[in-house]
Length: 314
Image (cartoon, rainbow, N blue to C red; front, side, top):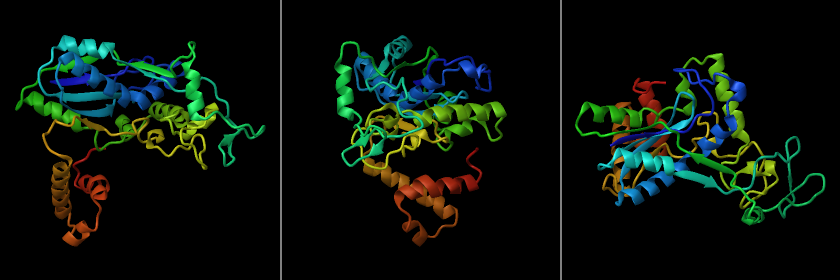
């Protein structure tokens, strides 16, 4: 089966372009938080689907951006699951993020300072609440989750039999985003509206927390988990805040453990064989290839080589 899951609307967008029809009312805050938390929602979906299906569902999926830059999931699922079940599970699944509130910015122009014992208010010298203390406050009956999200109403599920044109089309969908940054989804030549849309979403993502250890928690008056010196709000090192990925800082390919029937060592061996063949075809010699670490070969060099062959479209 081939399944596509999307996120809800954040405001009307121009068809075929993806930019907001009215940027002033577009919910960039929710769009940014949903992008940051999307992998967690997807994980909840697979857990719920396995419970409903009654077996260990295996899948190969890819996360990519829509024109509006919101992430969506394409997944190939092994086996036959009723479409009604898929839709019911997707509709029922939701994610509650029980983190401290980010409704109010505590430190904007000024930032907390590191004292050796923790981060403190730059004026009063009072230490900010630790991550653990901030979580304790969520035990109060009146506490609410920082963020709640669900999938959108557009859920597509199709039966696919391989080999067939439909199976080939599904493979193209699963691989089309793997060598592109999220920002490239809008195309090579951006309009002023597209650039403004990317910039606005990036500004929102820059200051939102991406994890329990994110430096941006200082902006909201809370010390991150395991806080140490050198943290500055707006300068978290996690790539989820980068303009090129716009919230999708994790893995773009999500595969269940038993999908291929191979071990990680076997996958690494297969990858190394393919990488070596591509590099040799590009003119690299064996000694040069051997000097490259496996991660560098697969993630950096091969990508540049493949693009030089014209096999990757920007």
